Image 1 (spheres, rainbow, N blue to C red):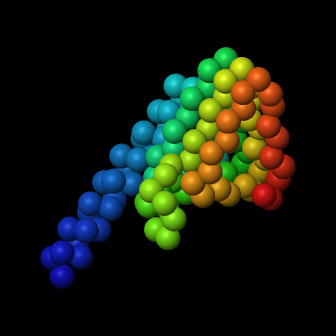
Image 2: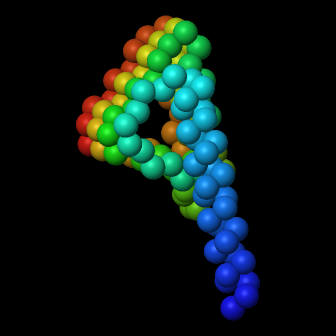
Length: 109
C-alpha cells in the first residue's frame, strides 16, 4: 500500500514539473495557443517562424504519453516557416518541421 501512495505522489509531482516545462517552452518560443493537453515534454524551436496550436490540442511525448511507442517526444521546428494546427487535433510522438514554408493541419485531425 505504501508503494502505491509513493508512486502516486511521484506521478503527481512529475506531471506538475512537466506541465511547467511545457508552458515555459511554449512561452519562450512565442507559441500561440488557447487550451492543450501534453503528456510528457515536447521539443519546440521556432527560428524566425511561428507555431499556432488550436483549441483542445493534445500531444503524447515519449513513454509518458504513449507507452507502446518509442521514447521520442513531439518535435515542432519552425525554421523560416510557420506551423498552424487546427482545433481538436491530437498527436503522438510526431515530428513537424517547417523549413521555409507553411504547414497547415486542419481541425479534427
